Image 1 (cartoon, rainbow, N blue to C red):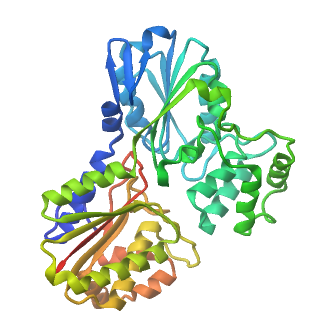
Image 2: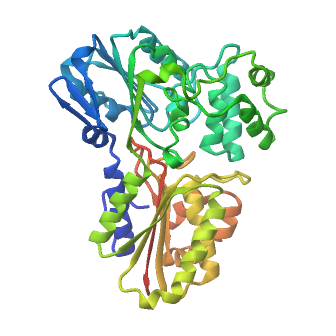
Image 3: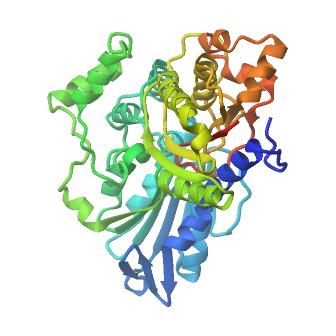
Length: 453
């Protein structure tokens, strides 16, 4: 395992420095402090100015994996003008400002604490009046830590449906379309509760293309999806007939107009809402590129929007890397290829692993098949939140030496891949990346290092 506190020689040390630089760049405290400027009573964000003197009370609500640092940074900026704040986190954190109250809720599957947190946040929004200002800090994991089932639904039904969709390999976009239509806070409903107060939303994006309607299921943003789409997703994954009768009834009533849709573009509520993205996957990739250049690599961006099945995507990347072996001797300096996004895994085996470890294992299998002689390579993939699926690893890495290690241990990578046991494989080879929860989330980071052998 790579210990973040210790370096290793050669490519592993280079790869570690690159991903650490990427994570440092998306530190939530840093992102908020660099994006929000205060001079006297004037707060400037992204070219917009907000005069604190024009508001009676100023509230902060922050929720998601980056909630603690985002909330604390904003509390420090607002200082004496902050009336009160609520921070909802998915794991225990060290509390800072005495003016921020902390609640802990569950991720990735919501629990009763998530429901209570959602009610508390809605309460603050409802309390805010026309002369008040509410800052909302949103980051990945917000959909789970704030979960308020729509009227007539139970938390248990939503939990089971979320678990079924995750296991079936649904994307975060698909998952959130369904969740928004079964919720009392998502899909712009938090913004509606805060109206007529002024709402300023700061977002750290954990979705492809920075879709504001998908991040934490868009509680302060309009929703382009529909009940019909939610039903189509459940049918696509073969879940419609097996879901709770209450869920089916809710979606069918929505299709018939018996219950209201989520808030749509043009709703007057959003005339009092301003939204700013303060960090995303490209923020991390740019920092990784800079660090790679410092270390003598030729950095190349491949994508910040990887999607689809992890092993299929890995096969495409591995084929591309193997082709580069032909030109490896002519490379003027080593290459560092960078990519990001978020993949999915359809679980069929009984092993443990996440999308990042599965990606690296699938790529290792393909690189071993291709041979790629004449090329020294390293492939790394990690979740920037430090959590890869239901494991304690952030991800994994593999290089040409990993193949030899596996052979010496008598491990068959393809068999472990078939059993979805990427975690078990890399635990034995010593290639897991262990960071613990990082307190941020901008999807995943992939690093490919190449040079002539």
